[in-house]
Length: 68
Image (tube, rainbow, N blue to C red; front, side, top):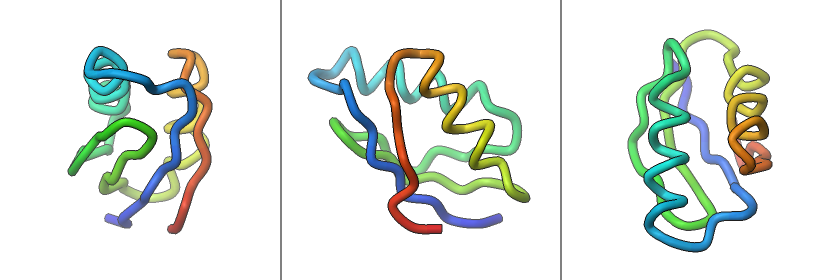
């Protein structure tokens, strides 16, 4: 598994954190370590980054990978 740190736009409150956490947990092969306003840290199997970013975009939270 690889560790990813994401910068996530449009997060403002605890509800946003909860929604992003639920979105990430729904992506197969992803283990969420931490979600806070504006960022998330997770473990991902293989190269799921495009799937992860697409899921967040669909939920209304555009994101980009801080490191891989």
